[in-house]
Length: 361
Image 1 (spheres, one colour):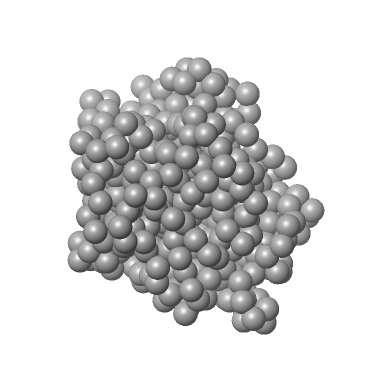
Image 2: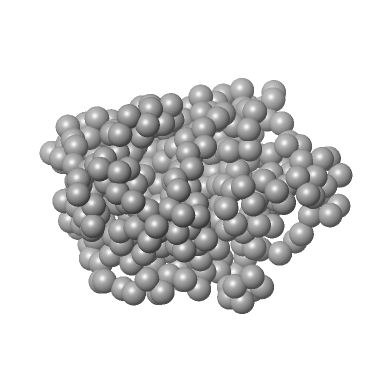
């Protein structure tokens, strides 16, 4: 990769180094009168960062090397894109990326898939490394339908079996959500089979995303517990495990409506839903992995509205940025700009300032 590695100092680590908190992170997308409200977190056993990095249309965009794949993804960006790069715990892996067309691409942990990566076979399509799949896909495609069509047409594949950047081999799942509520979701199943789920958050369960187990197993648990029913709240589990977070978010998504709310009320309601169903306080043990992790960050936005708000959970401070301001900063700088959103939030800033991509930016 050329662009992201310029702003990342990443030491090569063993793949087991990220395992203890491998059931973390959640995402919720809901329809409102103002568009799709989107909240996503990064949860981990070690404090995580939130470094923003820009790409402009026409920029040279090369994926991290997808070792073992014949054809490396290498195409100029088509859309202006702001990616969230996590340098503190994940060694340069992207958590998500927003483009200027109103689409977000997110990567969350899916530990069961790690058992299947050895069985995945190179299709010959340009291979996108999982480490920067969000930025690459967001920069290439306008919406979720275009992502699905591009994948089906052999324009790209995800390099499931390659090292995830400098972080070793991991199970992850990748999804794109656009301003219409359409979703394209990639998951690696047994035998190295890639399943691509598509649909709209208005009439499918694709607005909720967590970690293990695989989506088909989440769906079985939802059906068994009748988790969409109004009274399901009386029987939902209260632990922090991924399966329990997924059940709670599913229940909330099916029993809360944003109809009639103002834009700010819709944003606040979905943040509240997320915090109620999936936010993880510090020091609580997840009995499924016998370890602890916590929610360190969320991003909150209405897709296509331009403004994205970052919350630093360690301090409860928030800072916002707009795609338009990031694009202007990129143009004025004559190229890529960056920002440490967490540091700026903790410093009491309310609007992100982008600058040159150097240490501490």
